[in-house]
Length: 462
Image 1 (cartoon, rainbow, N blue to C red):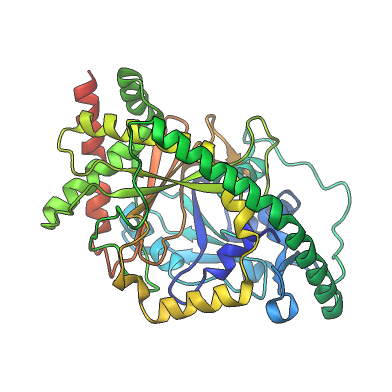
Image 2: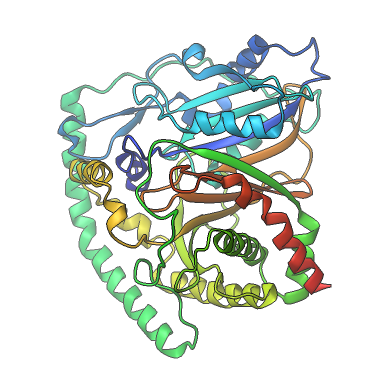
């Protein structure tokens, strides 16, 4: 397993769950033969060959000498993975969000492949919500999007192709073989280290030269992070909320000011957080910082059906700026500079270094840090995670059921009690917010503030 994937396993503690959520809301009214839970379960198992990571479980190396392995050595028990849930009455979006918050509050079972599918029935309009809960070690947002594309159909009559051969389990590696492979890998990594050190030195010097020539300052994690009520040690509880906003409004603002679409997303989130903090009489000393996951996949690369190819970029949310357009332009200016710095440093620098993460010491540190509530005693690396992933641009179906809405959100982290993830679907930008309710108790209020912030930008742009 690459270190970047294994790192998500090492970070996990009883209060820090490193799974992501993908929420598909489907119209089952025209499903051939009618909808039933067993039908959904059968369809998922029939498409399992299109979801390679869903067959693999984690196999630890003895004494954690090296990163774990992925092995597909056992049959999948659908009763362990495909689960039935009921949305409480009256079956609205608020009740579904509450149920999803509870689903997000429990960790995945490490003894089986790291995914669950919760089929949530009981929505008042007759639709069904399918909540895919999968560990971040399996896939990042780009890979998850490719997995979704792999199992969806472009018409209600389409069906996936049958596998060319029947699945056969891999042999389970013996402990002594795992130790042998781990030791060989360790020697190889030591041989790579001098080259990585040299590349890192060259990249750091390139960043220094770039910063000397630039008049735009990018924020520094921890040093420039203001304190807020939702930055602290998290508990195991989670809350979830959503907001759907028109994609055409984002494009209008983007075109009017010559900025990137993601700059508009950051400005909307920054505006909503500014209003939320004003309502709670919080006035940080500086603008909040966002950690923005950035794909390191090469342009034009083939779809990736698993793993993580991701780095982090740090930028401002402009929450100290009152005027929405001035906030947007400042975000665009700083974010453009942050991208230049990241390119100078090397898109894959983080991936290369986390390959050397020592499994046992890092896992022990994270458990102790979580148990002692270490995040309460220092500024967070940044204030909030904001991610933006492009989703399907055409209508899709799953087993004859039309996908009417799609939401996705990643995990929150110790010290960072809020994650805002945007997945587009058709003509909408679907915002999903995940928080620790013990740090941010009124997540719904924050989500409700997003549409107004977009309206402010649209009115100013027109």
